[in-house]
Image (cartoon, rainbow over all chains, first blue to last red):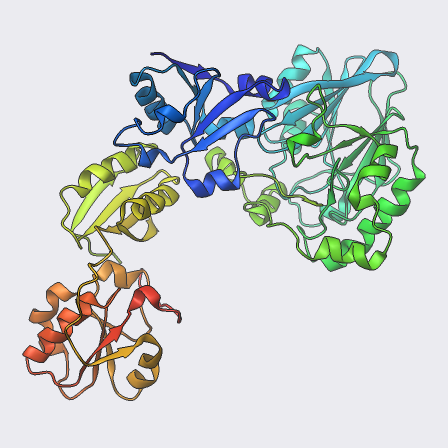
Length: 375
Length: 187
């Protein structure tokens, strides 16, 4: 029977629309256990391709005939081999073009909402890695926040929307993924902002992102305002966009809060994290819609695929915002932290401009899930 | 320095799944206990060769990088048959360090590649197959603690040494597969 290619974009659609999919993941078990394609209605079978070299007869009965079967591997080669064997055994089967590598790099741009005077806010959902980037568009101009390293996605999107990228921000020096911010700014002539307290070691020029800084996107009144909110890193800064959205970076997520240990010792910044979450954010309007820089689990996705929730609801529902005792809070965010993200120290070095790995090395560094949160 | 292998396989420039497909095929021409060196450039080959080896019963020894090429070492059917040990004079892993520091020598009779990826500091390497030709490197007056992975090859080596007139020979059990102490590398 036939083999059909499925793209990461098609898988993303199935995920967001909660369609069923049967994933035959042929990577080795460690890689699968560490990180896989998550979906509300996805089913899985993990059998390493090297256990199938002598034939797929044994797994054929385990493959459903009433839904699409997608063979997935790291880069594509093994999934094509296994898909061919499955097809020879008489089944229709898909393979994932580019494998987990392309899944990790795929960005789905989704509109979050309209802004004053015809502006728009887009969230770029990196489903495979859980990274969220943002683009504010208004009257022919754009600002980008927390861009991931696939810079062309952003520059092409800006072209499509016929807007000029004027401002590029990073809420903090990222440790789980490589930033595309500086390179987008270089390519477009935009201003690149970074919190100075996170940027002490960077080896390139940047514009300091200070508390209270405001930029206007387009000629009208859409404001992007910076709010110093340390805790994940010492420089972490949030943004209020159009008095409607709160971009929290890696400080506050939908179902968890930021971890304070990726750039130093958790003990040093736990006080800042507490101050930000329990005082600074409490002073903001509860109707602000929180837009974080990450999601951890797909249950955090809304019906339309966006990751966004009203601040007031998070105050009520997010466990990390409801720990009354400071001592317990301190324990929560310093003890039992999840494993650190893959190559996080190297990734920080890249984001400081100190090392410049090639594309393949960057892919290797970013393999696996992000792990920026504590629950 | 290069590590000795019985068979070399060039998988440079090949992407997954080819390094494993070719390794599986090449293993047909490797004898039990021999070492296969797989040269590859695909980084994914490290985890996959290790997992594949374990799943089919080969012994994955380790990987080293040389000029951008990954050199993987695998010993075919690494699990020695759990045959009856005949040599009577034995001691356990735990006892060996104290005993060996009192003037004795630890003789590691595993393959050179196995030794390279982890051995007891100060132990001497003479692979089982080379033992008979290298007896002059050993001192008959010295206590010799013979070790391998699971005690089988060292049992044979100890018998061989006794045959050749070595009297102070001891087989170490269960061997390096259960060694909990520090490991030195030579790669």
